[in-house]
Each structure stands twice: as C-alpha cells, then as structure tokens.
Length: 335
Image (cartoon, rainbow, N blue to C red; front, side):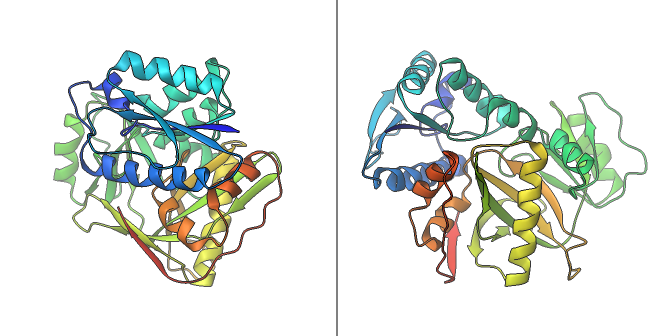
C-alpha cells in the first residue's frame, strides 16, 4: 500500500502561496514534528510505502522511512501533489486553514482521483471556518462559544460582552488571535481587520484538546490532552500533556465526538479544541475549534498509545474495528 503524506510547510506549500517566504518559525517546527512522527509510524507498517514532498530550501532536512521529492516552485508542488495523490492508495494532508490551503489541496486530491486519509473537502470547508463551525455546532446542540462574524468594514458590535476573543475565521494555531478586555481595545482592533474575523465570548476554564479517529465503522476518541497556552492574551500554543483526570477526560472525549459528528461523517484524524469549565458535570464545557487534520497532539498521543497510532488511524479509516490501549503514564510535549 502506498501512502502519500503531504505537510504544507515542509512539503513546499509556501512556494505556491508565498514564494518569497522560506519555511521558518512555529509553523515549521510543528509541521516538521508532525510529519516526521506520522511518517515514522506509517513506515513501521510492513505493508506500507510512504512518499512525501520536501521544500528544497530546507537544506539538511530529510525524512527517514520514506521516498521524498524535492520541490522548488509552486508549479512543481501542485503537479507533484496531483501526481502522487493519483498514484497512491491514500493521501494524508497536513496543512493550515489560512488562505484555504487545506481546503484547496483536499479538492485537488479529490479531483485527481485520490483517496483522502482524512476529512473530505466538503467537511474541511465547514471546519476551516471558525464561525461557520461554531454556528453548525450550536445548531446541533453542541455547546460552542457565542460569537459574531465580522467582515472588513463592519462597525464595532455595540454592547458585546467582554472579555472576548477576536480571531481570524480561517486561521491556524493562534495566529492573529487576541483577547479583548476593554471597549477601547475592540474599537481599535475591528477597523484593522483585513479578512473575516470571529468575535466570541471568552470562556474561562481548562484548555484541552481531544482527537477523534473516524471511518465507516464509527469513531474512537483518543485520550484528552491539556493545552499549555501563553498568558499574554495571544493564546500561543506552547505544548500539551496527558492524561487528564478521568472525569475531565471522559467529558472531553464525549464532547469531541459530538462536535465531529455535528459537522459530518469524516474519515481519519480530527482534532477538537475545548474549554472544560468548573461545573462538575460539564455544563460549562464548550468547543472552541474543530481541526480537520492531524494536530500537534499526535506527537504526545503516539507516545501514550501502546499500539502504532498511525496503523490504528489507517485501520479505522478503512472501516475496521480497532481497539486501542494507553499506558496512562504522563506525557509532555512542546510546540
């Protein structure tokens, strides 16, 4: 079986959208960590051959356990994505929602006749839009933060409850996210937005995430992770840890599965960001975002899983019933 693993930053995605921008920063660190982890796990499966793309500007960088193709232009990245998607049994995409990068590549894999090892383009279209996701969840009875969509040129919403969080509707990580505590901050921030943003009520509590593996036979929620975020009002992702307390873990897993199902019936790995409130029975718990792709938590979850997590992902995506067991030992990981 041939699996094409595409990670946007390491795989040459910047050549297409921002050719003058070389891979660097937090997105490179997290992208490199995720792609190396998933390639390592997939290549350990005896029947699997892994192929990937690699931005030629990343000198000294390589992938162990796979065959990779150097990318030196946007045209080459797009052509190789189509070629490898068409010739592989599955394509696993890891890309940010910024600028529709993930959605566009899902469409390209599907148009090339490839099989996504992840959610469809239709699923990604909803989950990539933070406001559309929240509205979809709330309509389905899944708790999500209250908020409004702000378009370029919109007036400052009157009497919106503060503190609040302002963030791009299509973003990745914490880029462009800021906490708003005072009306003056809101008045200064809204006129500066250059794309759709979501203004939502700030929800206090424990920041957590839970990943869900899905396929035709159903879904499996993985152990929830605590998220470590910066306290400067920008909510920068610093890393995570697991396991959570049993009661918190159960609440997070149940809510994550409900959120994933509310958007549709995906295939593969979907990460859900949550806030777990103080109420013992979870009445203050809310979903913050749904990430229709591999997330950084995979790095910690693979350490806590007694089995090969990528093999389990593949089996569940193909409709198999794959039980998983976890060590219960503390695992910490950094962004």
